[in-house]
Length: 362
Image (cartoon, rainbow, N blue to C red; front, top):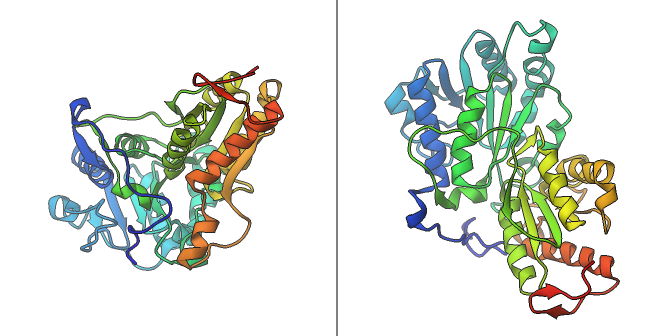
């Protein structure tokens, strides 16, 4: 079965309205960001395993090596730690490398260079050296890659000082955040979700940037806040649509970057709704679910009307079988159930729906 057919979590996204602007695919948006960065700054170069092959890293690097030459867009050996060292050294000497990986699993092989060196040089030499390095990887599921090739490691990197982590959910943000990451003077990890590669959206032509560290409200609501990033936002929006039919209005906060975290917007939403569900495409323990949940308990406790809820991966490795994957990964129904449970706990029962509102809502 092809990876994009017959999946429980539908890949049929809402079609953007062309009247709102130019429509482009997620892949096209990333490709445009690379073209702009390479064209405007001679210090930018893109490298990684397969960036110049026919698949072109899911299509995101297609045509780049023909346009900019193999000195700036090139394939690499199977030696992740050495290549991360090359990227770090190049960044320290004024260049802006983008080191691409098919999957974040391979970034684990380069943790020593990334975590021990790239993120710390600016601190250790009192700010004299910057390391403008981008590490790009595609998170995903659904093609049976199992425990060693389906990992979402963003949670492992949340506690590393000096590192930024970007996780877009729309083609617009994929382009704008990638350009911001390439122009940033710090190491930035950009984790895309493979399922988003099929998504279209409104993407302006030319150069623009989306600020790193600024979340956005994707859907306004009054009853429960759902927080996440990347593909989790698509699932959250689907969950919110089903909840609305029951009279429960969910507010969706798209973090866009999980490090730094836009704590103010999360807390602003929590003050309004009093309930929060945190969703992540990675494990619940020690990751985004834990960090945002702790934020809600630590700084938003006075506003909580119900316990913090988390929806993410269970504490087991990823299965390879298609059927087991449907139980392992978050879906819209599970997110909706978590939100519904918070409303039920707050009221002692599910309130009756009257004229589109929650009867007895405090």
